[in-house]
Length: 312
Ligand SMILES: [Mn+2]
Image (tube, rainbow, N blue to C red; front, side, top):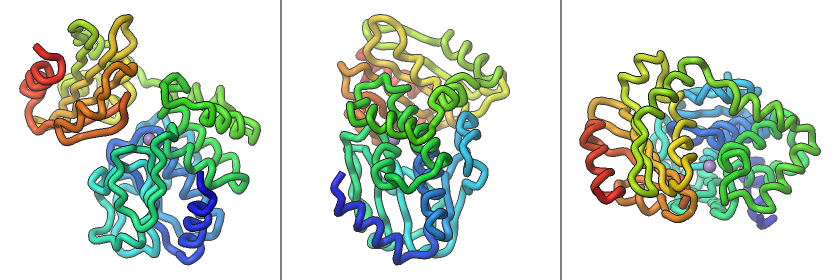
C-alpha cells in the first residue's frame, strides 16, 4: 500500500491521545483480529485505547491476548475513531453519536465501502482488514499483535482456501510466521475447538440442507439454538458448510435471529456474485461471501429467498 497513507495515519495517531477502535456487528475473525491487533499496537505507542465490538465476539478467538478487554459500548468523546473492516458506519452500533467525519480513519477491504472517514484506506484487493494492518504495523508489532493479524487473515480466507488469497497474502503469512506466529496453534484454536453444543447444532443444521441444482440452502432456528444450548455467535462459522458439497456453487444459510428477523448469509465458489444478491435485500459483502437481514419470520424469509435467489 501507498506509504503516504501510512504516514497520514501515523500523523493522525500522533496528534491523538484517546482513541476508539471498533469493527462491525456480528464480528468475524477479521473484525476481532483487527480490533485486537490495532488496539494493542496503539497501546504500545502509549495511547489511551478503547477496543469495541458491539456484539459478543465468537469464543474461538478467546485465546488472543486482548480478547477480554473488548467492550460492547462506548460513550463520550474520543480524539480519534478508527473503524476497521466496516463498509459503512451503519454496520456497527453502540458507538458515540455524531462523530465528526474528519476524526474517523476508515480502514477496510469491502469494495462497497462508502468512504465515510476523513481518511479512507479502502483496499478491496486485500484479503482482509488484518492484511492491510500488517503493512501499517510493519516491524513495530509484537507476538500478540502478529497473532491477532494472522488470525484475521486466516479466517477471512477460509484458511487460505478462498480466491481472495493472493501471492501477497501468502507472503504476509510467511512474514508473520517468521516473526514468531505459531500457525498450527492458531489453526487449532480457531478451527478445532468447537463446543459440544456447537457440534450438535451443526448436526441439526446439516439435517436441514436442501439442494436445488447447484444451490444449497441451510436453516438454523432459535429452537435449534435452545435445544443445543448455543447462541447466535456459535453460528458464524457454520455458513461455510453450505458450500462443501460436490457440485454446489451457491450456499445460503438462513438464521432466525428473532421472531421477525432473519439473517441470510451467502457463499459462492466464484460462479455467483453474492455481493449483488445480498444488495438486493439491503445487505452486501464480497463477491464470494455476503449477507443481509430480512425483517420477516424464518418461513417467510425462506420463501422469499427460494423465489428470488433459487428461482423456485
Ligand atoms: Mn474482513
